[in-house]
Each structure stands twice: as structure tokens, then as C-alpha cells.
Length: 125
Image (cartoon, rainbow, N blue to C red; front, side):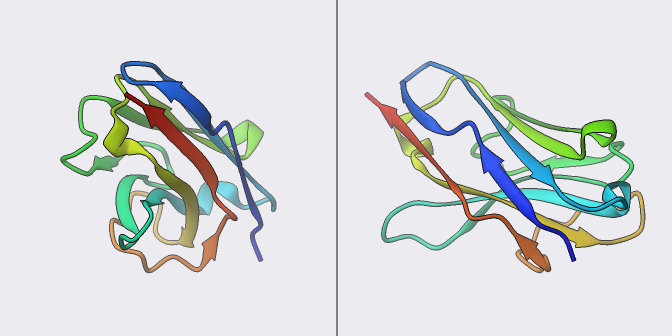
């Protein structure tokens, strides 16, 4: 069982930056591939970024590529999403997710076993 707690959301002006954190419980954090998803009002949840359990492989959606960076700190059992050059269309609730996969696997679909409660990101124009 893995519990995920996101933090770092808030209100920011367009062009600004935020860093989201996702703290995971458990002693086998490195065996879990991690991902970030987001859901805007009236829209379906969409993939944002993912990172493999060993931290070597990452993948981003086209809409955030070059602006967002996903990373993980195994010692802290935490995954991060650094968001730069934010746009109003980035406004959404952001969720982190975990799935037990081989160390180099990146998962870009929503087939994750564990999800956090979400953190709101609002970008004003």
C-alpha cells in the first residue's frame, strides 16, 4: 500500500513558476514508476509527466514539454514537478500517481494503482 500526498499548488500569474511535491509512504519507493496528471473543470484527467522507478527515464505531454520537469528524490520518497512559464491553460487540479513496474518503465496512461488527493494550480492571465 502506498499513500501519496501532494503539496505546492497555489495561485500564480502567467509566466510564473511553481514546484509541486508528492510525498510517498512506504520503503519501496524506488520500485514505483510515478506520474503527474491534471484535470481542469469540465475536462477529462490528462497525462502531464512521468518518471521511471530508477529516475532515468521521463516522458512529457506535448503541452508541457520544455516547460515542466519531473524528478524524484529516493532518499526523501518524493517526486517533484517543476512548472515554469505557466499559462492560464495549465490551471487544473494536479494529481500524482504511483504504480509498481520494472525500474526503467515509464507509464503514460492512467493505469496507476495509487493516487494522491490532488492540489489546485491556478494561473491568472
